[in-house]
Structures are given as structure tokens and as C-alpha cells.
Image 1: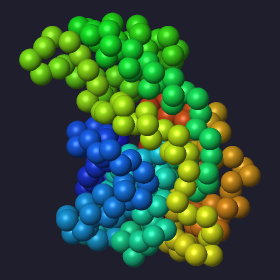
Image 2: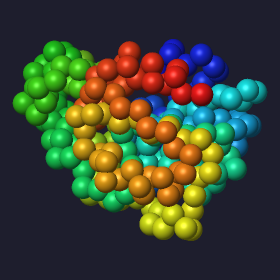
Image 3: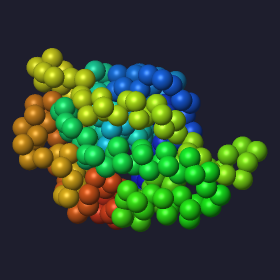
Image 4: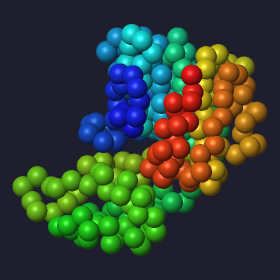
Length: 242
């Protein structure tokens, strides 16, 4: 996604994601702390914070970087509790509500556990196992971006701490803020949703408007994995946003 943004950008892996360290505490407040620390450490001024799904990318409004992270709810949490840190917000396929996670997330975790237990030696072997829980090749390829070769071994493992994420999964549908009268982000906010996903239902739009009164909505023909499933439409939606 960084290559599609026409401004300086920085992609931040949140804790327990990508190359960032593992940490047993995995919730939105802790991840928001991490993002705010990143913004402060790098001296970013009025960045655009982009987050997809549960976790946040920093993209810049001059003269700073754009901050891209891995989570919409993390990005929204930062925006509501520290609005002065950001220039604007992009939330991809999630809403500021408590919502039950799609059962797919649990299936992905179980599938990834099976991959590690099988001590696979080829990525194709891992893909065969994941096919049992996900038909979409695009989504399987997205999950397999976390697969790396074990140090000192010819087998593959996932670089993310699956056990920690599995333990945190039950709370990942929650949102830390309840009352828009207590926390509001008065700056521009773009909400991008997949038309085949249930995470940003029409019924959630009034609450989004109370938390983010300047929000705009973009619908993308896709499921929840908007960026992977329809990258061209997502890029167009991003570039059309002022």
C-alpha cells in the first residue's frame, strides 16, 4: 500500500504483527500507545493515519509522514483519544462499535496452527492446509505473507505469535469508546467499507457520524480484505479523498 500513496509514508507493524516484537498484552489501548509513541518518536506533524480491520499506515500531510498501521480500530482509538496528533483518519472496513468477529478469524488462527504443527517445508504445503479453512487464494496469500523459514531449520513457521493472537481474539471485536459526547474527532475522516463485508453496516453510520462528524464514506466491491481483494478500487478511493 505504501507504493500507492503519493506522499512520504511509513508502515508501522503493531505489536504481535509483522516484524514487531511479541507482547502478551494485546488490546486497542496498548496498540494506540504504540502508534502514538511512533508518531512522537519520529516527530510526525498532522499525519494521516490509515488503519485496516482491527489493528494502523502513517501517510503525510506536508511536512510529515503518513502513518499507516495495521488496524482501523487502533487508528480510531488514537484519533478519539489524541485528536491533536493527527491531520486526518482513514478507517478501512471497521466501525467504532462493539461487534462480534466473523468466525473466519478463528478459522484462520486454527489453520495457521495446523501449518506450524505440520512442519511444512514448502509454502505450497502451507497453502494446501489453509485451503481447508479458506477458499480464496487472495486471502490465503495474504495470510502466507507471515510465513517465514525457521532459523536453523528447513521448515516454515509464522512470524506472528499465533498463541497470543488466539488468546486476544475474543476481545478484538470490542471498541474502547462508548459515548461520542465524551470523545469526538472533528477533523476529516474517510471510512472505506467492503460491500460484501458486514463490519460497517448502514445501521452503524449514525454512530460513526457522532464520533467522526466530518466523515465521508467510500464503498468498495470486496469482502473484508479490501486492499487485497480490490486494490485498484481501494487506490482510487484513496486518491479521490482530499
